[in-house]
Amino acid sequence: MKQVVALVLSLLLTFPAVVFANPPEEAKVTGIEKGEAAPYSGVLLNSLAASRLFTEKNYSGVECDLRVKYELQKETARIQLLLDTTKASLDSVNQKYTSILQIKDEEIKRLSALASERPNDYTAWWAGAGIIVGIALTVAVAYALPRINEN
Image (cartoon, rainbow, N blue to C red; front, side):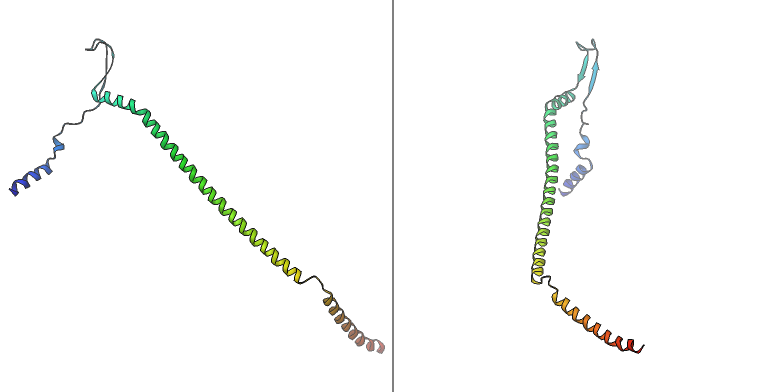
């Protein structure tokens, strides 16, 4: 029994049923003239060609609508992506601008506080410099006078 089943299965694998099928029918269109076994001149279609013609006629509008909807959705998605990217970039630039302004304002406040703590009063420096220059001049004159008297 096993041998028979094995033989049948091996034959089915060797010669599948598709091999014995008829080739598919092709759509045929033939032109005919009046008097050629037809009451008028025109085009003769086999059933496959006629069914394709009617099917394409019925569904060409639907196919066109689907194609237009697909392209419209694709373009809408592309534009939405571009818009979202631009919005994200704008938000980033605004945040950077706000941060820079905040840092600048804090630095201005800090420098203003430093400037108000130390006013521009340099009188002590002028007095100290005057004393030092006076001492240096006195020493120079005291050194130069005995030399002038000798000559």
